[in-house]
Image (cartoon, rainbow, N blue to C red; front, side, top):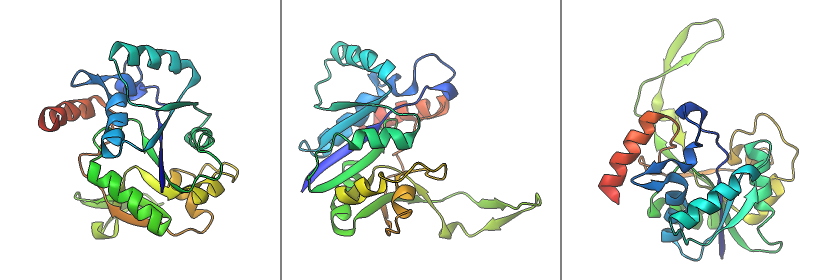
Length: 226
C-alpha cells in the first residue's frame, strides 16, 4: 500500500496581524510548516509528502529550508484559487495507477500524533474514507433563524481534524467534480459522491494554529513534547 499526504498551506496569516503567513512563523525556533512535515515523516518515512504552496511563496520556502537545513523529502505543488483547487493540484502529483491511500492535512496542524496518522491511513485502506475527530467538551447552543437559541446535546457532535485520508481512487474521483462553495473540507467533497465517512479518534493537541493565542499554546506543546 502506497501512502501519500497532501499538506495544504495557503494561508496569508491575516488573523495573526503580521506580514509573515502563519505557516512560516516559528514555534520552538522552528517554522510551523516544517514541524508539520516532520510529523508525517516521523510517523512513516515511506510516506510521499506533497506540499501545496502559493507560487509566490515557494522561493521563500526554499530559502527557509536552506536556512534551517531542513531535509524531509517532499514535492511542491502550486496552490489554487481555493482550498479545493489547491488539493486538486496536489492530487495531480500522485501518479496515475498508484494503489494506496492519500491524506490531506492542514499545514498549520503540526502536533498531529504518530498514532493518529497511522490510524487514519490504516483505517482508510479498509474503509475508504476516514476523518479524525475529537469530542466536544463545551456546552453548545444552536442559533435559530428567528434569533433565538437552544442548547443541543454535545454528545451528538464532534470537532473535525486532519489528516482526512481516503483511498486514492476515491479522492481522485471526488476531485473530478466541479467546485461547489459547500465543499468545506475533503470529506464534504467525497460525501457528494455518496461515499460513507468513517470517524476515528484524533488527538486534542492537533490544533489548527490560527490566532496569537494558538501560538502561545503551541509554544507550550513544544516544551512538553519536543
